[in-house]
Image (tube, helix red, strand yellow):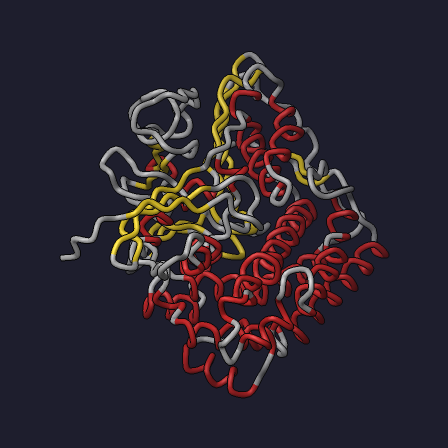
Length: 487
């Protein structure tokens, strides 16, 4: 047993993170012994909504976030659609899926090229044999790969401009589908934009056709592809081997996905479920509870979002974050691209998660593989749109005066839920459980740490490090969006 007194290290605020984040570490014996993750910013969106007309949510909730606003719109629209008992027509479903998928893919691209990989171009790694190649591709604001990715991202988002008018805070997302129909010529232009983005991925990120990457089904297949190919994925895999990233930032091994991209025939393009550690179970939304014992909110028993509250109490003893602590059946779980691909059964991602667990390596691998899977889906959804047929269900804006509903969506960072209640035509209750709330939650009433808090325990800290580089790799592997966390 190590009896070295622990020193307290506060890391933050983090750059290249949406919102404010602070991580408090107790360090002893060269490793993190305990971590507390603090979301220090309170925003109050859940208290802005009561008293308003239900459709006002479609204007307000996208402004929760500047990088995943479409995801918030989709969750709100699905809650309103459930309240109204309406289903978008096929064209509407395809258009909304494209909007959500374009945003998710853009977030994955930005995470890899702008948020995550630049940390390996820092001078702390200057003596590593791979450093010059990483610096050339990923150095912040200067790397040739990062700069090319930013250009590709900008052109990629013109798809949202056509389908939604603008990004962020797109306003074409409605309970009954999309308010923006497209004709045959616009569909052709959008297909050209998707294929342009495909070319970027196939020449720079993967140096292979997307279908070849998406079909990788084992570590042996990945290694064989790596031996033949190039691209930035190969460079990332070199870092995994050199730095042991598959041993860094272990997750809980339990995963949640609500299912991504609903289809006209039913089901989702990426099936949802709860991975219990060995198998997928159907998701039961009623098993979700939010614990506020260590959050700056008035004390209450863990509650389902349909019954919970957001009542700030800044001087609450024992609290250290504005994030709540969501739990599923009392369990800590992880959400995000890794969870989606494990639950949906991608053979490579599931095999690697079973072999090494959730960690820095598998989280980033899952995001890259998800891009390779989803971009061809976007092409297929565009081709499935039938110009001249409706994009919106008639009468979908006619909402009942009373009722309650849940709306779910898979954002880039994971499972997003909106809980809505209406009485006399006005919102009486609105609660949001965001992906980063799951992953960056504080401890619950039993003292059980959230996923990131637990993942940081055991992370190495070098002598004299005030901003430990390994800690940053673990934090960024979860790709936090703190402004969604605190609503």
